[in-house]
Length: 238
Image (cartoon, rainbow, N blue to C red):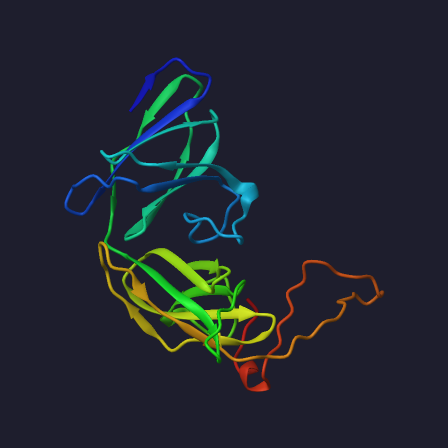
């Protein structure tokens, strides 16, 4: 439903509830332009496409979001909570001075996956890139089929909220370590207990160079993969 209000912005309101119909306080809503293509853009990370970010909101104690947004814009609402799943809602914001009241959003049970990235001596590894993939979609490449991604912090810790129950693998990459693909593991739903998944990395060899085209001009933004020959059988480019 749409109603007028006194403002130069558009106002978008929605209520977030769990499967029992109870309001979800402190849920998170990230508003991004339609240009964002990551599967989960709800939780901030150094890997976020910040140019697509419009704004970030928290729900109140009644599970209500009341978001003032630019009028007449096509945006995507990413709504979720640490221990509940995420919903992705494409909308067009109303005209200035109009309030758009959306239907309540129900979030399904999920979990928050946490852990530490360590080397073989047990020391923390910071700035490792962590991809979470469904086990049935995983392969030897860091593909675009991931559901979540983040970067380990200074103490090697990472957090992946809003992970739906299911079977997953972690892929972890760092320039100074061998790329790791974990064995499949199951994430169970929980309302308040984080699920722990630690990873140990082995030292690898860093390779540096310049990527050029056939005329010898440098090429920026290229993806370069270092693969064992055994990985090439039946492989396809990401």
